[in-house]
Length: 299
Ligand SMILES: [Zn+2]
Image (cartoon, rainbow, N blue to C red; front, side, top):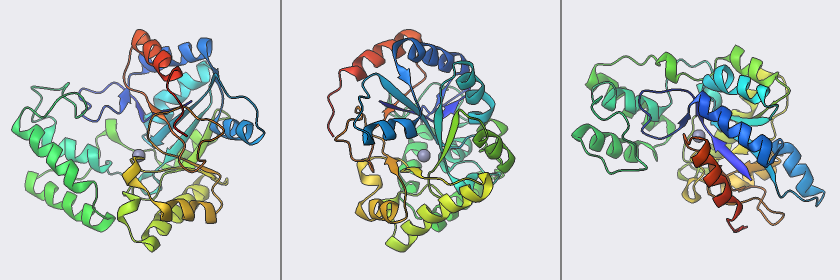
């Protein structure tokens, strides 16, 4: 199994359900230590290549590159001696801006709509006008190419009279922090494009740029080769044949998608399934773990 996390943080509101609290992340790792065999994604791929058994193996991954990956997640990974792969949006590193979904939340929802801080897009339909606006803006902004997306955010900022500066709680890693994260023996760094676009919405040349430059920029910062990738959003509509061909041709070893399922020998190396982890307590995580173990491979 490959697990997908994004953030380890305590947040007042989390409409995309991206954060797991540090306390709960530690509970998850403690359970994995007892119930599973945590290994790195690279080792899992190596075992598959050697046709060795991987039942009971679990690899942890993080997408996007939030600063809390270094500040909160790494110390807990070290405590439990569990490795993880971090897929980093290269253009966000040291950029001082928030990821677009966080910025839309800051401009539209928080703190203006603090009446309903636990509301999220997964569990319930939008209840307030601001929640409705947030959902429809996210739907419209997600498929935009990078320049159009930047323009849309600039318009929103002007309209709401808010600055562009990132909240300290929502910032991405700085270059120095990424280097520090990469230097841990528990960590592998993977690529996640330059600007987090829906790759399938881009022309082939733009896809190539996002994939190849994203990797080069990371390699320049950490001084080591990067050979793993995860698709932004990772859903079936988020990448296409062009994305996969680009990854293969430019020497990537594997790529993670975002759809649930166990990894098997039959899995497509360039669309590895992952289980998304939410802010579950120990009991909920155990229950999910058992459910995942009974999920049939859909190759
Ligand atoms: Zn992402």
